[in-house]
Amino acid sequence: MKKITLFGIEVDQAAALAPMAGVADTSYRQICHDMGAVMTVSEMISAKGLCYQSKGTDALCQLTEQERPAGLQLFGSEPEYIAKAVNLIQAYQPDWIDLNMGCPVTKVVNSGAGSALMKTPDLAAACVKAAVKESSVPVTVKMRIGWDAEHINAVSFAQQMEAAGASALTVHGRTKQQLYSGHADWDKIRQIREVVKIPVIGNGDVKTAQDCQRMYQETGVDLIAIGRGSCGNPWIFKEIRALLEGIIFTPPTPEERMEMMLKHIRMIIAHSDKPSTLAIREARKHASWYMTGLKNAAAFRSQCYHLNSYEEAEQMAETFLKLQ
Image (cartoon, rainbow, N blue to C red; front, side, top):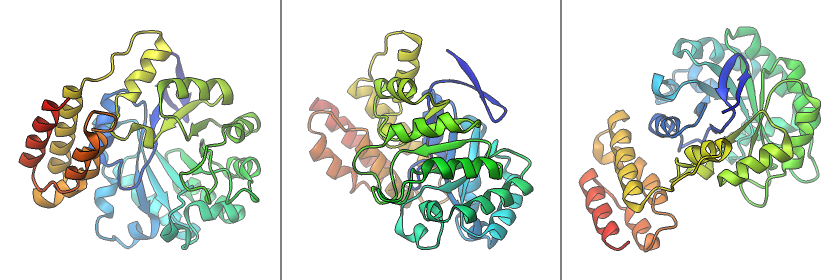
């Protein structure tokens, strides 16, 4: 497997796990790392929330050795709060700090953060400069290609973030307006890769190992990050490694998928500071994703959203497997 060095960290040139709010928690990151993800990134952490010690922020900042190398991702649009948050977040010993400039969620965008920063590149650059000044670890940027089809400024934005001191860019090939619909524009990712000197990580529409290989070929990116393509399928990281190394990959059996689902639920409960009856609710969506593509999946996915205990999940998995 080819090795590459990104902002001082040597990894295999396979695939990393992209940050996903409400999905890529500690349990998810550990599972994907075990399956071959070469890097992981935390869920979004509010810079202001960190400064004001908002409830739940500390939990989002926790990193374990089982998911490293790992970065912590901040979002915000005020350089002074970004600077303070960077100072605070280093206590959690991230391998790097990522600034979110790609989230399209209305609540985040309305605060001027996330993908709204694509409309204010000077402010975005000021946030990067503030972070770099205070950080003892590399600062990277997660971005989109623009606000909408009429305002695609990916190349100039990327150049400005590089000039501000960003150590790498992760580029999702969609605009804010697209959310997660339509198709990711890999050509814009390629254009960025051609004009900046810092590493570029490609993201968007990588759902199979073949997609990953094709993105490398078409864009020339240094690394690829997979988000939604890993939901219910952490084996995608193992499959990508197999394809790039020219070895045969054996897809997981229904039994292996249910085993992983139950393991994932156990990990979520173990890592949660909530009672298991509440923690199981956070596991429901993951349980449903593990069934995707299998026989009778539709009927059982609806059951997943009513799970109230680990024992119910065990019983459901047993019944599900009898129908495969």
